[in-house]
Length: 213
Image (cartoon, rainbow, N blue to C red; front, side, top):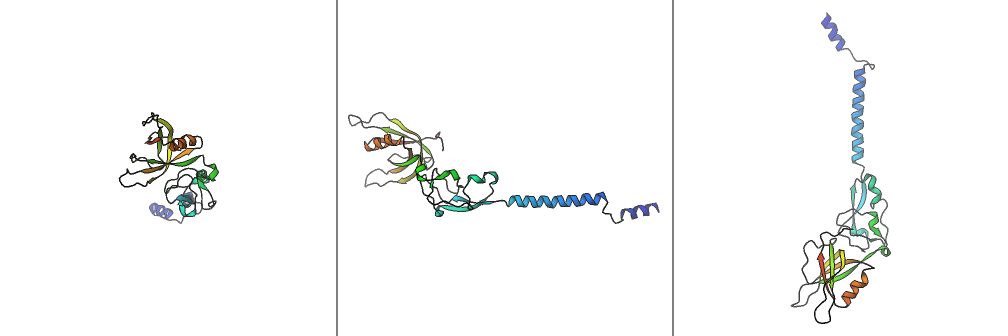
């Protein structure tokens, strides 16, 4: 009889006042709330612009240069160009932006805000594979001497950034040339243009320790 009474007590329908039932309900509700919060956080993405291809310094940015991606930025969202705020017409790149990279807001501005401008240097010497747009190079200049020889080379532009590179035109029998566009400040511009105008020998040397801007 005692055992039957114990079984009946255990099978008795629980009351709302039963603490075990309340704890079970709280656990279920907590689990549901956690799942909802997790899903809501995972879906908190923002539509932002990314570079469709490499964007060079000074290049005017158009919608055709950009693609739209969804990313989660959280607290750093204000630092990037979002679809919500849109693209202001006439903006140019103040710094190089790599393909598929997000567009930082401070990388765009007006053309008169550029503190570096690209200058073309024709090179016959072969450059290392690491000398690509965005890499840093040292530009050395040898001025023509009093005779047919050139003066000792001098470092004119340390750690200049390559903006672009293109294959130059060559005539039959001549060496193949590469045109390297290096970014030059207004302060450095007169010396480089003067050297080029005086037919100085200009050499571009890859600088692996160059500071990336």
